[in-house]
Image 1 (tube, rainbow, N blue to C red):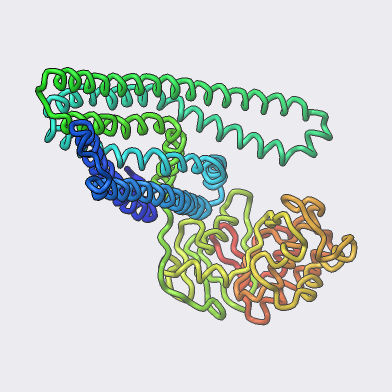
Image 2: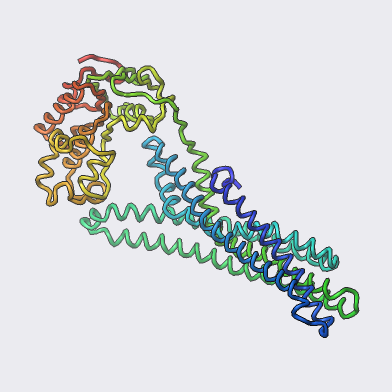
Length: 525
């Protein structure tokens, strides 16, 4: 399975699960053999029954049953822990891979990744805790039990070998029938979750326009479609479980009839007959469990396959290993051709779609492109050590649900919080908030106007001690007086040695540039 290749936690879990399966199989077969000998001895010679005579075999039988119970308990515990580790590792890989994508690609993959991380991969738990242990036990106990039966009674083993293949054949057929249903169920869940997220985000607007009821009906239709798909899968699961139980029961019954007839005619010993009869259910039982757990595991398998396809189609960018100090370093961009020097403000301007924001993403390492930091290619630099040295203000500042203080210090504590707020004009906003820094904000900064959100993002960037500032349209949504105040603070940061790259097109922004980059041509201010 591809999970073996993709997850180290999966490999560790499988090794432990196989070990538990071997113990369970050994204890099961040995206890059946010992129990058959005890029962046969008592039946054939009732007068010889004395507790002292059977104390040893009974103690051995008790020890084997205890070993099996302990092994099954350990298997369940390992399965629960292993499932949690595998799901966390796979979800983490999906999250790291998706968040490392360029912004536009991230938006395209957002819904699929969100569905997988929040709910889809949780469906792996039944697969890992129930289906896989049953499959391992079927692969170990079933052939071992058949071999032991063959040693005691080859005719019973032959009957088992004839009936046994019917169960996996029906399982494969049922699996092919339900594959499309499980994939459709995952797709319905992804669509439903995406619509729900959009609906929750747009509730204030929909309520203002009087359109909330229409969206609620659409969500109800999607939920009904998902419910119908799930119920169809459950119906197939119940039907397949019935078929598998009938096949297993038929196989055991055939073995029992054959043993009974041969015992009547004296063609086999009671010990051999009881041993084969006790082991016959153990041959079919693991396969029945596999069939029962198969459908519960299908949603998880579909989610895991979707996650692995996503990871294969969106390979995580390999980061370099070198670390470099950004303070005092010149950043060279190949496209547009520019040297962003410390102590200066470099303004990147041009029409919409010309690649200004892409250039900032390239410097961040979020978009492919050639960038050198003090002569070292960015591809060779460890991004985890590079990002803390950058203060980035995107065109739409990131604001998460929480207090104003938590959002100001989202990327780490600010050396001087009060100075940062004054530089961005956010001190005036704080004075108007009911609880100041402890005022709680909603999703995407709900509770603040667009201009106030911009000032919060500016305070976070300008108050950072990072030596590199990447500012995308830093004065959008600001009036003229506040724009002049912010631009002065930006210039001040550059004059104390920071490397500043600004995206802008307004004349006041262009006026602060020590160099202005226009569509790939370099012009000094």
